Structures are given as structure tokens and as C-alpha cells.
Image (tube, rainbow, N blue to C red; front, side, top):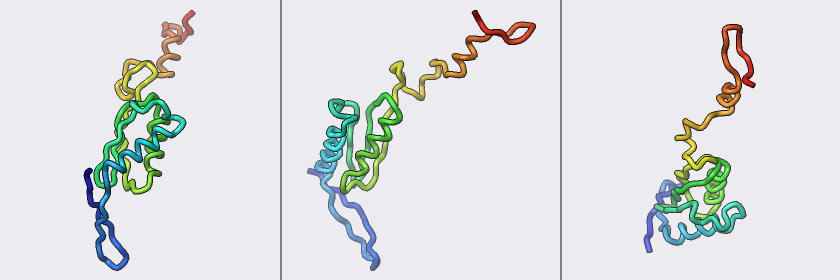
Amino acid sequence: MVHCAIPMRRDDGFVLVPRVNEDSLRREAEHALANHPHFRGRGKWIRCDCCEGAIRLSGRVPSYYLKQLAQEVVRKVPRVTLVENQIVVTSPYGKVASDADDIPSAHESAAADFTRSSTGVTKKR
């Protein structure tokens, strides 16, 4: 069982340093995710690590919506002071979204339907 201290300032200037049970907080965050309808049965997608009341999320999800949702679910867990979201979003093609340079954008796909000629731009048949 690991305990970390979180410095907090009171109005009178004294600093309180409560102890946080990291294992307990990590389990609470994992439990909140596991019981959320969007993450039920998908527990291996996201990993929670804890230090000093801060939760670090890592893993892979298929959309930015789920990445943000995981962060908000964990943020609402009591005693969580910070959420560091390192979840990676993968594209529908199974690639990491930021590395999906070779996946054509909607604009590139539309542009591929047209060709240039000496008389102007024409639609491919």
C-alpha cells in the first residue's frame, strides 16, 4: 500500500499534507471506468496509474469522444486532484490517428475524383 502527500494551502497560511492511498484511488478510478456504459466490458482499453492524487490514463480508444469521456469519468472520482490523459486515439483503419498521414482526408478523396486538363478541371468518369 503506497501513500503520497498532497500539499494544500489553508486560508490561515498553514499547509496541510493529507495522505492519499494510491492503490485505493487507482482502483476507484478503474471502477468508475468499468461501470460506465461506454467502457463496460472494455477494461483493457485504458490503464490508470496514480501518484499523489493525480491519475494518469493510458491506452487506446477508437475516438476522441471516448478519450475525453474517460478523462471526465475519472475526474469526477472523489480525491482525484489531476487527470493526465495520455490515451492514444486510433483511426478506424487501426492506425494511430496522428500517424495516419497516408489515410486520405475528405478533401483529398474529393480531389482524387477530379483531373486537370489543358481545358480546365474535369470530373473523372
